[in-house]
Amino acid sequence: MNIFDILGPVMVGPSSSHTAGAVRIGYITRNLLGSRPVKADIGLHGSFAATGKGHGTDKALIAGLLGMKPDDMQIPRSFEIAGEEGLSFSFHEIRLAGAHPNTALLNVEGADGKCLEVQASSLGGGRIMVNRLNGLAVNCTGENPTLIVYHQDRPGHVTSVTAMLAEPGINIAALNLYREKKGGEAVMIIEVDQAVPSDIIRCMEARDGIRKVIYIEGEK
Amino acid sequence: MAYQSLKEINRLCEEEGMPFWRAVLQDDMNERSVSEEESLATMEKMWEAMLSASESYDPSLMSGSGLVGKDGAKMEEYRKRGDTLVGDFVGQVIARALQMGESNACMKRIVAAPTAGACGVLPAVLVPLYQERINRERIIEALYVAAGIGQVIAARAFIAGAQGGCQAEVGSASSMAAGALVYLKGGDNEQIVHAAAMAMKNLLGLVCDPVAGLVEVPCVKRNVIGAVNALAAADMALAGIKSKIPPDQVIDAMKEVGESMHVSLRETGEGGVANTPYARKVAGEIHGKG
Image (tube, rainbow over all chains, first blue to last red):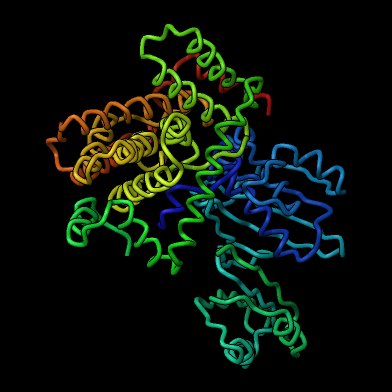
């Protein structure tokens, strides 16, 4: 932990795990969706379901979906703002086998009509982990700049993507590859040390067999 | 590598002839690969946020559950009447601690120090001093002292109520505040760590028993004991009193106590005051509302 994990974060209360972490889950979901969400159906699991309301977890998740960060003073007003910005939402309780006690399952639809299912957990101190993307098990914290590359499970994609990053001197901090089945849809989650310019992302997306690339700027 | 012991910080300070806060600053520069100016600027931001949170207390707010709010204002009014048992300064500290705890429960912006639940302790002792007589630069340095102590606690033990009970949250905050206070009053490095140790020792065993699982009761008022205990520990250290148990060993004891604490007393809302008939009734009403 660095000293600003001890003194900090600056956040809207009352709980780093149930409020600040929940805002970040909403925020990363918006980024992963890649467009403004217009509809969200959110399942709350474990402690999020049991004590979430009293901690403003519901308002925090919606605030994040609206693009707010954990220190945004508008978080308590997020339900009203969602109304103004055309985001409709609903909450329900859910049981997710084996999930961390502070977990949410978000089904969101973007303004461009695309849908995404994100399962994410709040680990404490405001830190989070995305556990599933459209059902596919992944691990992604969003703390560092991160590329999420959806592609077909076929030889050569990892090489071509990492080469495109190496060219301008972008260093890979972590690379994880997940696939639903052999030859099916696969996803690479690449955490990097430097910001990734948008032309590189466009180049990746132009590759045959790469369906979509999402870029999360990271927080550091 | 962050410091693993208070002893290590003080040994380094002695070798290099530097103050405690500078050892923490240098470590931050190494850890995060930032310049001195960048680190100081981030700490300035934390102080700004603390100060602004402390000044923007809204005496009319109640938490969503209706359990907490308005007590900080009551304490402040009482203090202003000039007849507190603890005197004016400590009266202010109590009022500030309550106010910040309430602000947190009411979804206002605060600075976790080390956690949101314990966010009232440090500002409660620092803000009144700042307003009276201490300049900004010294406050920023004192925040490094506090952060360094907190970092060692996090490295050797824990700072989450779910892991170690309230002693890990308010106990750690109190320990951090005690060290910061000693620094502000001109105490030496040895006095800083002994104040931190005495503050922690006095709160060993404090359980985390939030009513209905919310950061409200007894959390808001526990910020008061954290702050007042920090003042007492700092004054003892400045008087030349030492912790008989070496400071790092006190932190290790906190870890051992936390680990042996029953799970019902570690932020589950199942034991302690959370398990009283009144609390059970309140919890039923809150969660029943859905």
